[in-house]
Image (cartoon, rainbow, N blue to C red):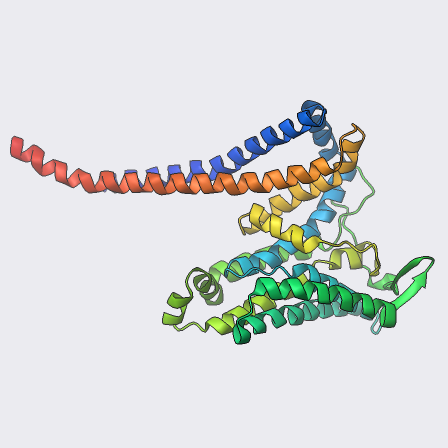
Length: 376
């Protein structure tokens, strides 16, 4: 009994150390590579990192980082839903932009007043995102078209369709800016004075983002549907043998991913710009892919990754004051993602080797005891 407890505690300690080692290795490697890049560019790494640290501790900066991070986090969740079933929804970018166009058009029309308009905008965005993603799911199931190819092509179609909707149906010209009608004041998402020392409010959609993260974890880890989704992603043949309909799971997963994707633009639409125009944030879907990889599809890990990504994005202007090109930030982001992937792969391989050695020792232990008794 004592031996079993000792072995169990040993495995827990090993797993704990390895869980800490991966991010530490990733951060150290990212700092090292970034420092080399800064030196090659003729900049001072110490000054750059000091500036970043000072920027990140300012109340106004913290509020801005949270606001941008909310959109990044929702984008990562949308991508991660597909990743957990081994589906690559590259079309998140098109799904959220088309959803934002349609939702902004209806919201600006003020079909219903006040809070009901907020609900309408959110529901429409979810439905549009889900339906657009369902196209890729159906093509995969009934025509065998890879979701990678179909979603990339649907991104281009969504961009063209969104531009047509704005120019021909929802758009109004304000100066030189063509966009949808602004959403009325009574349908704005209220901000939250979460950070003391700054008048900048945190986008109220942060509450929705937190709830989405909780729902993501519960559905995938505490429900039968989540188990079937993960099982199908690991082995379709095993899932079929267990009575799971793979075709149904593919379509449902793509619909869920698209539904979450439809919410990506809502913090900006309901809490910042209140309309869709040429200035609406683009490329958030691809950012979500990087953050999902960075956070290993874990809701907490993706939250940390979203805040880190937002911090680097928002701090690029500060680095330019030191004559450091803002493209350095993009290099830092890429290095961070690669560092995390490499670090976790190294730790994963070490974990396998350590587990094999542990099993070998346990198998060898009973064979040594009889030999010792015979010698006595």
